Image 1 (cartoon, helix red, strand yellow):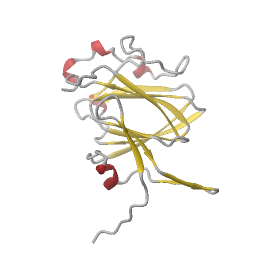
Image 2 (cartoon, rainbow, N blue to C red):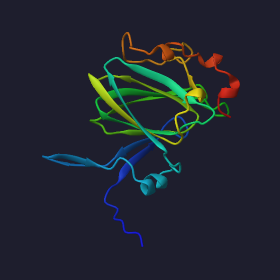
Image 3 (cartoon, rainbow, N blue to C red):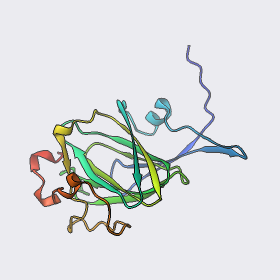
Length: 191
């Protein structure tokens, strides 16, 4: 017999790019602080997240850091991302060739203050820029990290024209070598 009590609700918004979900979990606070449920398999399955998450990642970054835009194919990852401390400008790009929004991007500010989560299904490149002094960024992944299958979409690809809100971003050598959308191998995009 399974015992559970539903004590919490959340707001879920579908984004302009099909499959993306912006989730606002309910937070319960008082003078001591707050309580927030960040993952509940049953509840999240009800809103359309059927995947099992197999890996959790946590990154720490300082202001101006830009990470991404990363994706894996084969072994694509769906991600449920959120910020534990600080604020980021989170960006995803649709790399599904059959999608009417192929090559389009979506961005949202995620922060420890707004407590938003973004579900990014497989088929998207993902990255973020740090807006606060420091940030702890958390993501649950539906497949394991496979560096041999990872590709990087160039963060400042002129055809995407993403308005990153950081001047002179701090970028890894790997991310500086990202490819423009038109230069990604077609077989490494998604159907």
